[in-house]
Image 1 (cartoon, rainbow, N blue to C red):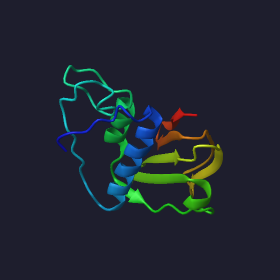
Image 2: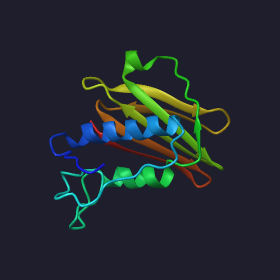
Image 3: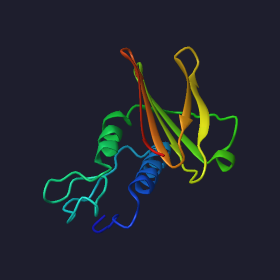
Image 4: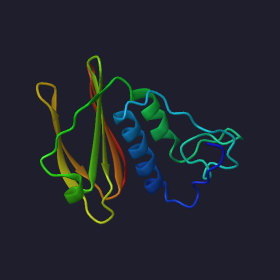
Length: 149
């Protein structure tokens, strides 16, 4: 990609879009996603570093995805479909580590979802509207983090 300007999008809208695109790519079996460099400002390139070395506002999510969006993509089964909830879930396993991304793309409502893997973990998450939530489960415990609301 040679040129892009993400400054017109709200930070949370961009990160929801960016994460969803990476999740879709992973589901399709794409192993690597490249980036462009040398944006003129952190807002122009929200998920990366600009040409002056400043991190964009969504860079921490990009860094988390780069570190944990690895391993085997897992099948996600929901009792309620995306069209009803506007919640998208991506899950990955690498060894004993699980990485789950939950995107509430509903602009008007929070949703409560249950994220579980039989014999591994069973979590209930309350998701604010327009939010990114990640869950990392490994031998040391469970870390839940999120942005939005």
